[in-house]
Structures are given as structure tokens and as C-alpha cells.
Image 1 (cartoon, one colour):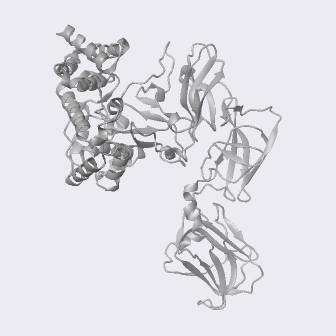
Image 2 (image 1 turned 60 degrees about the vertical axis):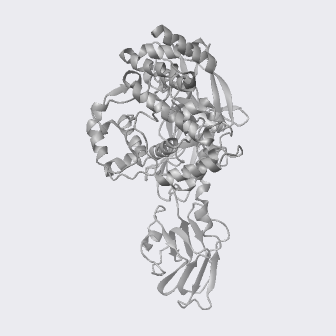
Image 3 (image 1 turned 120 degrees about the horizontal axis):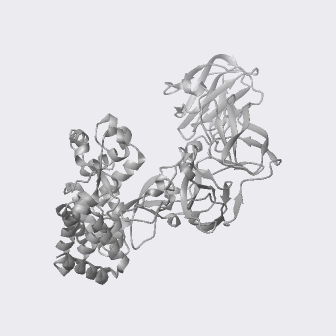
Length: 617
């Protein structure tokens, strides 16, 4: 029986896929490693070996089994209480339940004492056969999958898990609205000029997918509202209706950047259409979650491998998003260390994002994103060790080490902790042509125009010094566009003392936000506000700031500058900001810097100084 089955598997693999002996060996290795569960896996292969019409199903079964080693979920009995908790959440979708079942593996506090259950040792033939039949039925049913590459189908639609969840092989029911939407798409989007992108876009625009969690468990909400889990929910929804979809992600994320995980529609006809997903993310690598096994570092002599690179179920897809290059570095490796890594700074720590095996003192790092700062590192005794100073990889592929002789110094003038992000420009445009006027009466008859905002303001606190104007009781800020989110609005006399008055507007609640000197609090002006000072006053200065991210340098705050030197951050001293900038003199030149707000606790992105301005990385 086993001999016949082995011959059938080899024959089918060679005829259908053109696979050679190593591919067959991977299958045999998986079967050998499955121990007492081998009989269950062989039942699946035997089931699809009996009828030549099942050749593609056999191919699908081979794919799942040979890539099964390393996949696991919680042991059912060890999360019994958690499953009972989920059962009390009411009418949640199967996809929402699936994501909730991912949480115990990533948050052990939810299930103390959870045990792992390896797929290779636990999955049963009946479950796998039902799953493969269902997914293959979907492939045959929907027109947009007819010409999809079978390898793409195996990677992005066939797998039974999306993470380390407890897998439930239960059929998924489709709502009537969604079923109607699918039938429309199936019947009307068959032209080869359309694609899976078109189908997915149509389905998502119909608002028939529930891609938000509906459960009311408040303690679980802090987990399910994470961007990663919202992304997984969308993926589970789309996969359940036959859309090949996958999660891409960056290995590091900073607090000011966009989500570090996102879903991608996979289409064998059209190239990637979502490069803008990383427009505001500073990264040198992008990876893709896969079910299939990918190469990763292999520890020898107990060499430490960083956790990110122990995961074989991720594929490097950087060149789908970024202009990349291969770089070769000559590095002095510690004895017994086989692998070197490129690390990027995430605002807190250096994190490895790429690896290379050192051969003859040389390391070649493949598909590295340009215009980023990296540092070569290794891990002797599980601790990160710097192999060379940080460097900039320019778009020309030139490598510029961030180091210089110790006696080479410079002066830095810093205005922000983080870079400006264009996605906030909408708020600043609302104040264009805003007008400040003053008058002797509340109806503003014969007013004096004090100032007109002609350009889009930036993040800073702006100061206006009106020309000589007679004292007036009423002052007004009018927004021609009808709406402006304002963080600060101050009127000062010639001695710098703040003038206080009564606000007159449609809504004056929370107007204290305009004078609390906190850039993170705001109050909207719709479309104008009048300040009644109770008597005629002379205004020598007006200060205003629009809705803000809070990362400007703040007057009076204490800041500490650090530069990276010989494997650690060195302090360049403390300064108290006397204005909306802070200046450090006599600082070592051509280094990687970061700034910390000691008063507010905020840290900056790493940056360099070109002699005139800050460049964030």
C-alpha cells in the first residue's frame, strides 16, 4: 500500500508540476516527521490518487502537507475556557471568530498554560479533504479564478490558516446580500480586461463585508482593534468568498508612521497596485505572510537567531514596493558567528530587517531599499553587536558611513522631533485667506483689517505683529472656508501679557483649548469667532497654531541630543528651548542623531544634519 502510494505521488508530482526529486523529498520528509499522524495524511493523498480527475486536488494536498511542518495552533483542550468565552459573544461571523482564535498564541495572558498543537501531528484526513474540496469548488465556481495561476491559488486561497489560530474546519455561510453581490460579479466581470482587483473593488464598494469587529467583550477590544487584526479580518472575509489575498508588512514600525501591515489582492495577470501603502513608511524591507516554507537562517553551534528571522513563513517582496539594490559589505565577524544582519532604528531600538551569511568576511544583502539608514550587526551570545558604523544607502547605491574624525564638529538647529507628513495638509489648507479684523462694535461696522493668512501655515506657532492700530474692543478671526481646527489663539499686549476676553461664536464649549499652550488640544472655528475684551485694548502680538501633532520644539522644554558612536548612543548635552527651536554647538559631525524631549518624554526619529537642515530617516 505504502509503496503504491509513493509511486502514485511521485508520478503525479512529476506529470502535473514537473517537480523533481527534491520536491518529492520535501513531501516525504513531512510524512516521516508526522509520526503517528502519518496515516491520516496518507489518507488524504490516497483519496486524491484514485481518480485522475483529482490531479489538481492531489497537487493541492501535496502543497499543504509538504509546507505543514512548523505550522501550529493552540491545543484545543488547553484553551477550553477561552473558547467558552468566545461562545458567549453572540452572533459573530465565522471570520471574526477565526481572528479571535489567533489571539491566544500571540497574547499568552489570555490563556495561561496554553499548549502548542503542531498541524503535522494533529490534523485529520476528513478535515483536510473537506477543506481542499471546498477551496477547489470555489476555484471552479468563480469566473475570476479560472485563469489564475495555480501556484498563486495554493499560496493565497488554499491555506486553512492565516496565523497561529485554533483551526475550525467548519463550512462558512454567506449572507444573502453578499451572495447576490458575488453572483453579479461572477456574471458581469468575465472580460479579460477586468481582474481580481476589479472583483474585489466591486465587492468592497457594495459594503456587504463586515470588516470590523462586532463583539462586545471590552477586554478583548484592545487586541482586536490592533491594525494587524483588522487587516486579518479583511483577509479572512475576502478569502471566504474566493478572493486571493495576502498580508504584507514591514519588519519595523514607528509610532508616527502608517499601519505596518496591510492586505494585498493577488492577481496573476496584473502587477502589484498598492505601492502607496508604504508611501509614509521609512523602511528598507517588506515581507509577505505565506503558508509555504521560505529559506531562513539555520543556527549552527547554538548561534542566536533573532526571533523575526526564525519564521520561515515570510517572503521577501521588497522589490515589489521599493527600488532596491544588492550590497556587499566586508565585515570583521566574531569567531563562530555565521550570520550578519542589517538593522534599522525604530525610535527605541535597532531592529534587524535583513540577513546574510558571511563568507570569507563578505556579506551580500539582497534587495535592500535605497535612501535608508542601516547598521550592520550580529548576535554573539544573543546580544546585538555593532559590526560597523551606521551608513546611508543612497539612491545611486553609494554607501556613506556616518562617521568622521572626532575633532570634526558642527552646530545643529532643530525645530521638530518628527518629519512633516503631507497627509495632514488638509487641515492647514483650511486657514488659507483667514482674516483677522477689529472694530468698536460687535456688528463689525467699519472694521480694521489686521492680517490675512495668505499661505498655508505649517506646524509652528505663528506670531503676528499688527501695524499701529487704535485700541479696539472687538477682535475677530474669520475662516472663509467655513471651518478650521485651531490649537492655539493668543492676544498679547505690548508687555507680553495675555489679554483675556469673552468668546462669541456658534459654539464656545472647550474654547479654553485655544489658550492652554497644549498643541494637542483643539477647538474648531465655524466659520468665525469674536473676542470681546470688555473694553478697547491695544494688541501688540497675535499667536495662532492649527491642529497639531505635538512634535514641534516647545519653548521652555528641555531636550537632550544623542549621536551614535562605537555601538551606542552618546549624549551631546541638554538644552532648554528658548524659542521654537533648540541649538546644539560643538557636536561631532556626520553622525546619526536623535533628540529626546526630557520634559514631555517624546523621542525623535533618527536624523542626520547636512550643515543646513535636519534630514529624518
